[in-house]
Image 1: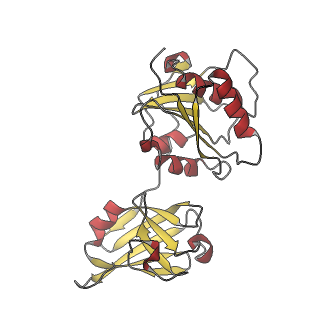
Image 2: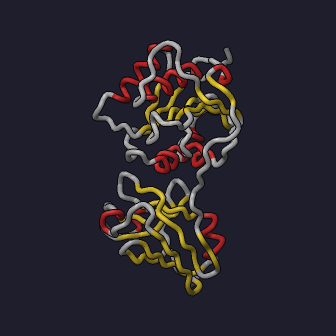
Image 3: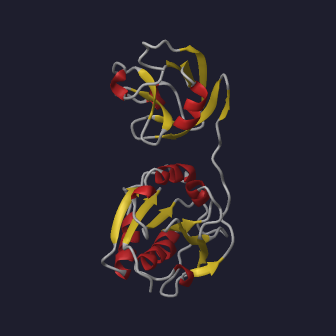
Length: 273
């Protein structure tokens, strides 16, 4: 066996009102009771592989080498889609091959990739691969079993890619890619792209029913219930409401277009963009 990190993170769309997450944890602890199980979230919207990938993109860099990430958002459970385990940048990932991992890692050729073998020590449910296939595989990986012993190598993951913003000298057109628990609406417009195009000019944003002027640093830069734009912890542009839900109040949902328009140069005394 290889040396191992006994940490497993869990990300699913199972919610917390049923016993599905508990069943997976019980399966893994039955294999190795010393595993450290960390919940990322089980509140991904049902079947929303892009949302799961977005959430994980924000957190995987904070975990150490050898961590196993168990990701079960699986609208194709029981079908011919592959069940996979992979290694990339010294971390491991286990779950269905439905495009989520290419969104997460931005590659369809990770460092090492296998199609998981069905377990020999129990039945495989056609509707709960999370418990019967993915959880045992993650537990064995975190216990030091080499990846190549868990399945058969193959070449490429199913490919999906993020929609990219469209930009020119006059502005940027992007989209809402994620809405968080607070109703903050996160776009696919990066700080780097914004700063490249903005070049000291005034900024106006259009999203849903909102017209928002300037870029702020914190939510409290505007009065309570007022909208604003800022760059959040992901370094992506957000549409937000101070102490409110931008999604609800501005009628924004995932996929809503966001148009950023640049105008006259800011004067030197202006505190916001």
